[in-house]
Image 1 (cartoon, rainbow, N blue to C red):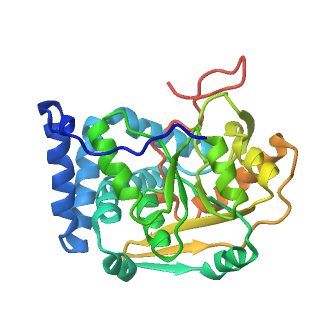
Image 2: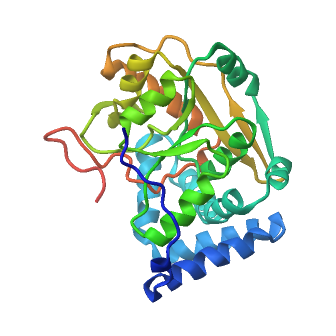
Length: 309
């Protein structure tokens, strides 16, 4: 059984050391009630301002795009970087939308396509591994889907216990439950009983339970083998989904795709390459909305030089 205990609010979180966090979360709540177009403009402004002080992160975005799309010109990369920075700032506001908006407002802004695939799996009693990528609006996508069909979220506790409480509470609004990302047994139990588990295998999580597989133009991207572990042990369906915002209208489209066929069982290396193709397809639905500021290729095979300088 998992030893994970959901965070609760205690008097200790009122200590002065957490006042800035409380102010920040309170500000998120107040801003979330503003009209969407105002939040959109504020998000762009915050992103552009932040990147003036986070030049290292800007270089990481540039380097990731250079590695993944070597045929993209410098001018094209610059356009993509500017759009990505705007989306990075907006992500903060989209988290507030996900945590604090009432269901009716979420439903008004998010259209869901492909829900019939999930209903079919539910009727069959088959567990579903919902394969996500770290798009900037992932929080809002999970909330929108959870309103229709709740699931189990894979959760990484925050080091700040005050922020962690609000993050957990916001994410648990429409998810059936949240489990620690290290609780593999908990994920297996959920899938075996026919639940839906949110899962994002697109980041570099280090060498543990990983292998190297192609991702875009990078031949050796450190990729988790956790997908194979979960699929092999439960025979669950692998269901990709994407969350894309139309910047012109401010409307979001959450798309649930049909369960993939041909996942290579009992072969973690081929499974990693297979899942990276899904990741590529998902990212390309709206590449400017992806979290390029993550050092995706920081872990290298033995003897290979670091790709970031």
